[in-house]
Amino acid sequence: MADATRIPTTETDLPELFRRTSKRIHRNQMARLAPLGLTPAQSRALRTIGRAPEPLRMSALAERLDIVPRSATTVVDALVDAGLVNRAPDPANRRSTLVTPTEAGHRILTRMSEARREAAAETFAALSETQRETLRELLATLDAAGPA
Amino acid sequence: MADATRIPTTETDLPELFRRTSKRIHRNQMARLAPLGLTPAQSRALRTIGRAPEPLRMSALAERLDIVPRSATTVVDALVDAGLVNRAPDPANRRSTLVTPTEAGHRILTRMSEARREAAAETFAALSETQRETLRELLATLDAAGPA
DNA sequence: TATTGTTATACTCTATAACTATA
DNA sequence: TATAGTTATAGAGTATAACAATA
Image (cartoon, rainbow over all chains, first blue to last red; front, side):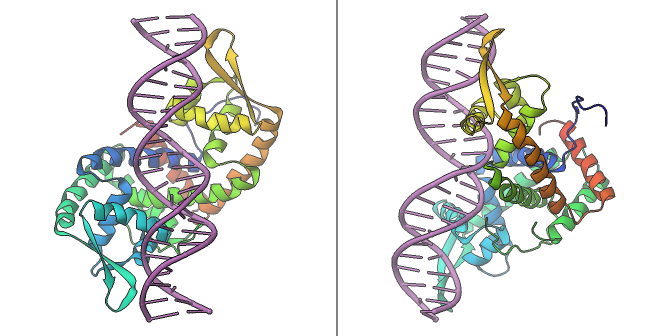
């Protein structure tokens, strides 16, 4: 370890590499979703809501997005204001709120997937399909391992 | 730091997997750096400043952190307020500002590396060293490919 | 006139805490 | 009393635009 003054040209720090890639993903999604009037977080929420087989409770949405319930309120507020989802009290338990996509919400979901797919293709263009698959597996392993 | 009772995913969407991991990294760093009075962004900036062989100009710092100069000002403000770095006009070009770690800054850098290392070990514990190396290579490839 | 960094401002995203309304 | 969601608030992180000082 003699060469203490050497500055690595390339970053090898895993957390730092993650941060850089995440930032690029975020910027790319931001740019591609802006024409739809959506932010990445709103797009994620709408996607989660649209993908659920049944109306989602706010708490269930928060869980799936890995955010606290209060944060889900902010995101859903924006989607409601944009006319993309509806909020309705759960008839079975009036404390709960059920969220469902509106007609406009369903329509935008298609264009959204398009935008997300394009953004991803662009961001990961430097990797082959095999490499992307390896990456997916590694990240899925991490994700499955839970917090920490 | 909220553990919103994370739900593991069968998510195969690369951007989404990235977001989840990044979030975990961020939360872990947040928790481990808080005792030092640092946020992750401040820690990164201090690390970059401390690692440079010569005093960094603000613009150079911003470039390496991949943020705009205005954002570098905010981060450095915090580090100056904490007494960890000094700002001084570049004698060779008085428009430029040079940033260097203080004595306290140097001292905290050691503890910081420790905290960062622990956080990373914890976050990536689910992967073998071989897998981590593969991950590093894939991310480095993406990073080298530049924006987009 | 071009550059370097700053002041001023705003927005995304997420958090904690206290309150409201149900149950 | 416990639960679900909200109002109120805060703070990290980053951005654009206008401006001052220096070159």
